[in-house]
Image (cartoon, rainbow, N blue to C red; front, side):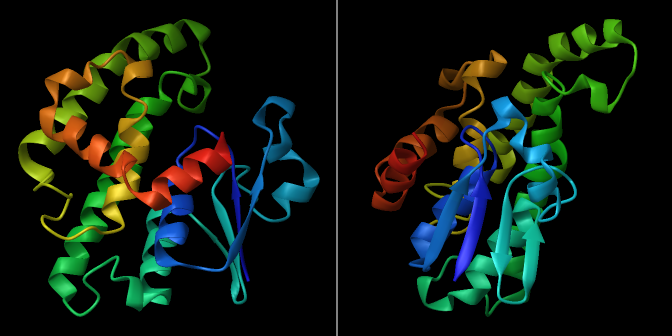
Length: 205
């Protein structure tokens, strides 16, 4: 059985939704970030990065959201969460998820994780001030060039959709008005109506 380690409000939500959408048999264990459980010896033995998500499989442990989403799609092909029979289309899925991971998430993290990139605390405030601008720019690009609609890849729901839903949920906290992003806002509404999303949000609340 698969086991997902997550914390509410994190990017682990994407993998949690994907597992539910896939009809996977899995358990989910919540970590308490307030008590720094992610850096406990027990969890660091699972994921030395001290971050979530982590997915325990019968072949080992996976980390990093794009890898985990691809694993879910490939492990449960009957769920049709990715175009597995089309190498180019699957690469497009991976490209979108890689952008969310390497650029959008990093832009968001500058708000509260400045210590990852600087040691002078005066720099932290400057990074935090920049977040509304950088997140707005990231999502403007998604709105304009990447979100085909109604789902990320067009007419077919894929593993890109729970990931976008997860990161777009951070916009308000990053002082970005989602009303300026009508396609992203519509995507959020569509996602919120899906039974798997409702189930996972209830479980994580």
